[in-house]
Image 1 (cartoon, helix red, strand yellow):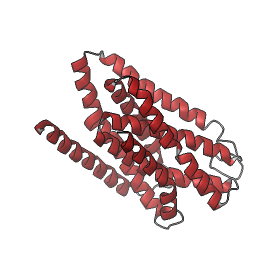
Image 2 (spheres, rainbow, N blue to C red):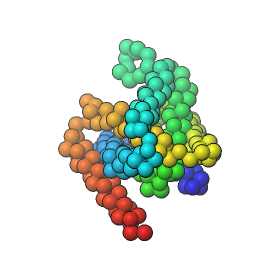
Image 3 (spheres, one colour):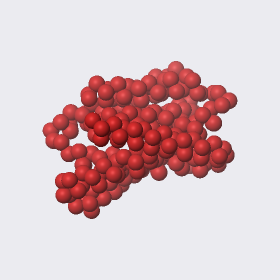
Length: 255
């Protein structure tokens, strides 16, 4: 399981290099980015409503845990991510006369914020793999799809902050490696006790927050005008997740 977590977090880290080299400064980048964002939102929401929440209800009945307690865990996770993001972006946004974007003159603040963001991605991936292999794969896929536009955005901010392309790419990759650190620390920390119901609630809350607060708002941006394509990719993503969930669920019952 540790090997799977390490491989998954390394893939996320490498996205910062591969994603930028393939997608940066391409004419078709906006459409590809919209497709990846739509798919990422669908994968996370599909995982929540097709697998995680039903799993929570099932385990709650088996273990006799009060559902209100589980609801508080889910809500607590969402609040934690909200406060974390508020803290991370506290120093990012300053008023500029010439730029609409929130850009801090010190590029290293962007790197630190990105590193902490990737660290939490690593935590989510580790928790997901410890729940179930397919949940881990889905989480990795969704975060990878989300990381491509995120890393391109961070790369652009670093260039504006005065970094050279090579330097921006290097520090982007270094900050991305914190996903590996988050995954490994989470794995060893959670070896002390098995709280699968708690982890499932934690994954549910984090998936919901990332999908609804972090990813979907990008689809409503003024620059994103391909609404039909967004809808098609989103529905396609949901159908794929539903199909795979039904397939694995069927196999699990027959074995």
